Length: 97
Image (cartoon, rainbow, N blue to C red; front, top):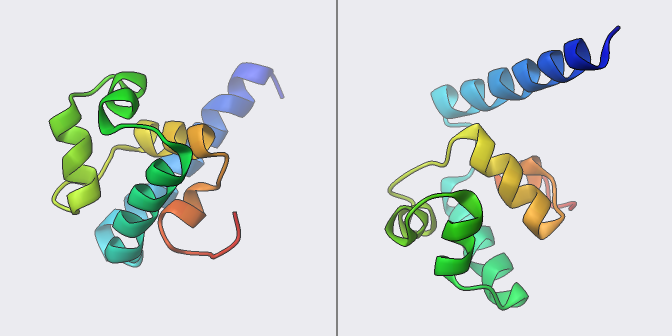
């Protein structure tokens, strides 16, 4: 399997996984909000800094923390890398980083 094919398949599986989570609402939205806030505060990072890293406005990021908007898959993956945790942890599907 070529490297490009591997990454294409991996990305497709992640998108499918997140899509199913979003449709079924099986993730804990409140836990997601709380984890975003606590991880950011523990890291000493501002909303503005995170918004810049994600390529979005500070207001959009604030909506993630307020629970009024759900980030797209790309931003979930970026957040998990910034905080060195899994996407499942961010979404409240597991308590293990």
